[in-house]
Each structure stands twice: as structure tokens, then as C-alpha cells.
Length: 531
Image 1: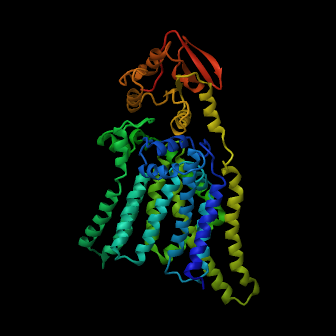
Image 2: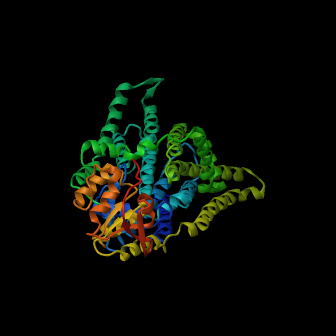
Image 3: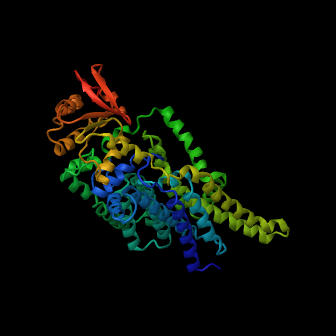
């Protein structure tokens, strides 16, 4: 029999093994690998409490500020470490969920902790999840919130009358929303999961449902208080940022997606179907064929022993897949991470069900080879986890990646004092801001993001910060032209090579100063800007 202290040690080992893998593959500074172009933004925003892109992610900012105060490594490395920590904690929480769930299935004591470790291990070394645990991003914290919600639902199944669990559930949901608002996609599945306890003989206990449901909603709403940080910092004129959260209406717009809302549902139906067909292939890539077999066994086990949780998984998965395939951003693959979070416990429960069936078959068989069946299955499952680790570690490892940092620093080192630099690339701008405001390097340089200069909130932020060097914010069509004209002859005006498409004029000539930096020599200026 495996007792609770031994089980706790096994779950802790799974967490620590994952953390060791993440720690040894974490980027030492900002990185552009693994959809990491925002790493500069996250490190700067956490350290300075500036406003990151919608929906604002205030919980990430609050926790990131704590990690930013660590006394070692670069600022970006400390925020990368935060992702590693929450990635490992997510693995531990998934292992705990697997161990605590599916209680109607009676198994030998050693089967549960082993299944929990294997299910969590399949998630830990899946390539997309691992890739987000080595750089400054919001996704491992998002996954930790999802794992916590699943753990609380598993507990609620055995203690449906515990009011404190509802408080914790509301708190966990609200805090998860503080980091990633797509957590809301889990709300219908959670509501239907809880509703089963308010049904008796086919009739709904309306009074209890309203009373306990309102408790969850009130606690979750109160837990959204960290968004007030964005309101305060927006009103204080926090810089650098593209965004405006200085008024309640601006904060609500930012919270609800801001400039990105219009991207939803723009794909034609054929494209949506194509993206949907890619989901099973991506799931196979994350979990290996053995892992997929375990997930299938987990589905069977839930249908036999916990239909309630199965409904939760199906509803939550359907809503998250629908969102991911209809959201046309370059890193939309990351929006499938909630699907992988739902699949990992299924894999763990499939391992438990499979091992218990193998043990029962071996015990009832007189054939000697059958006695090896449990050991063979254990070998297959451990082999799947090990193969993930060995296969993906070389491609995930960014522990020696200094390219983005060195590239951005080489740009700043090339510039004369008090330069006005026009950049046409978001990753360049976020990297420049990181060095300037995260590491306090070359703050004499005024960086203008040509790509986002059409956006009113960004132009207003520039006017507050650099009045006199930039034109009024109500001139979008001539904004870059105004920047050049106001500074020409007063400050050096340069552009990165990627910005030339935004200053497209046959009467402009450039002098290449090296490292992709061009000095602007205007005669007559016109600009091609998004309206």
C-alpha cells in the first residue's frame, strides 16, 4: 500500500523533475523563439507596471513584479524563471488532480500515483507547453489556473455541500481571469458541472442554486480587483505602452480585447474547417501515440465512472477549440493549451484504468507471459514520457539564446545621442523598450513604432511623454511625416530597415549606418499608413 506521505513525495518529484527540465532550458534574456516576440513587453511591463496588450493581465504583472525583484540574473531571465515555476506547479497540480479523481474506480494503491506521474509527465514534456515554460509569457500561469479549477471540481464531487469550496472556486476563477480572460470559456462547463448538485428527482432546487451560484459569481467578481492596477497606472501615464486604460471605459475596452476583438470570426468557413482538422494532429504531436491511447482509455474510464466530469471536459474543450480555430493570430496554436490541459488528466486516468485492467488480467491468468503485462504497459508509458523529453529538449532549449538581446543592443549602440528611431517591427520595438526601460539603457533614444502609429492611444501616450518631439495625436495620416519634420536638424532621425515600408517615398534617401540602421534624408515626405 502507498501511504499519503509517499504519494506526496511522488507528486513532488514529478513537479521538481519538470522544474529541472524547464530551468535548464530557460532563456537567459529576451528571446524570439517559441512565439516569444512579447518577452520584452512582459519583462518591462512586470518591472515597471506599464500596460501590456489586451486584456492587460494584471495578475501576471503583480506576480511578475515579485520575480523581478529576485537578486540574480537579468530582468528577462527572472520573468522567464516565473514561467518555469508556474509550469512546474501546473504539472504538480495536474498530477494531484489525476491522483484525486476517478475515485469510483477501485485500483491497487501503487497504480494511482504512478498514473498521476505519467499523465503529468506527458503534459510536462509536450512541446507547446514546454516551450512556454522557458520564456516570459502568460501561458503557464494560465495553465496553472485551469489546473487549479479542475482540482477544485474533483474535490467538489466528493464534498458537494462545502461552501468554502465554492468560495475557493470563485476565487480561483476570478484570479485566472486576472491573467487570461479566455478562462471565461470554462464558465459554461463549470456552471453545468455544479448544476447537477441542484437537481433532485429531475427538479431544480432553484433557491440553493441561486444562493450558491451567486456566491461563486460575487467572489469571482471581487477577485477581478487587480484590474484596478491598470486603471491607476493608465491614469498615471505609465510608459512605454501602446495602450490606454486611464478611464473606466478604456479599461473595459482593454479588458474585453480592445483592438483584437475585430479579429474574431474573420476566417471563411473552409479555413475554419482546415484549422479544425489540424487539432487532432497537434494533439498527437503533443502526447505521442501511446499518450493518445491513454487519453482514449481515460475517456472510456470517465464514461464508466464519472460522466459528470466527462461532460465538463467535452463542453470546455469544444468552446476552447471553437475560439482557437477562429482567432487568426500568429500564435493561435497557443490557444490550444487549454485543450492539452484537459487531455492530460484524461491520459493519467487512462493509465490508471489500463494498469488496473492489466493487473486484474495478469492475476486471473495462468499463463506466465500475462504476468508481465503490467510491466510492459508501465514500460510503454514511461517510454512515451522519456521519448518526449529526449525528442523535444534540443528544439525547446533556449538556454544559450542571446540573439534577440544582442541584436537589439547592437541597434542602440549604433545610435548617436538623442536619436529619434522609427521602427517598423513590433518585436524590435518591444526589445528596444526592454533595454531602455527594463535595463535602463539608452533612454535618450526616442523609439517610434511605425506599425502601431495609426492607433490613437499610442499617439496620445507619445504626446504625453515626448511633447514637442511628436506631432499632435489627431494626425494619423501624417504622423510619421510630422515626427521626421519636427526633429530634422534638431535630433538625428533614423529608421530600422523594417520601417522603410512605412516611409515609402521616392524623394527619401537613406544612408546605411550598419546593423540595419538607416539615416533619413527627406526632400518631400509622404507616408503610407494604415487608417
